[in-house]
Length: 129
Image (cartoon, rainbow, N blue to C red):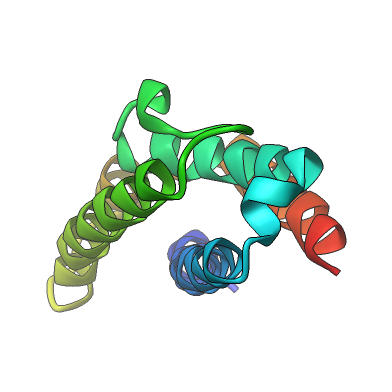
């Protein structure tokens, strides 16, 4: 597997994880678990902090424990909008024959971001179950 394929694989995984975690957060809001469980809210905030950095949203927008459901829903909308735009910009690289340096620049993926995403995702999955 070459570096571009590793980047593409990580992007696909992040895209799937962002959608999965956003849906899980929405479900936790709907059934009241998020308001009732500060540890769960903190785990979502931790993962969304990573996602916000990756999507350049700004971590100040990430809600935390004790925040109203409307604040969480507002963040999820923002996350979705930025996620769509980010992955669309990266998807454009597939149709062009660009060097790995451009893939690195546009995707903003390196070994540290791969590790950080996987670790944050694993912590959140453990908190959800």
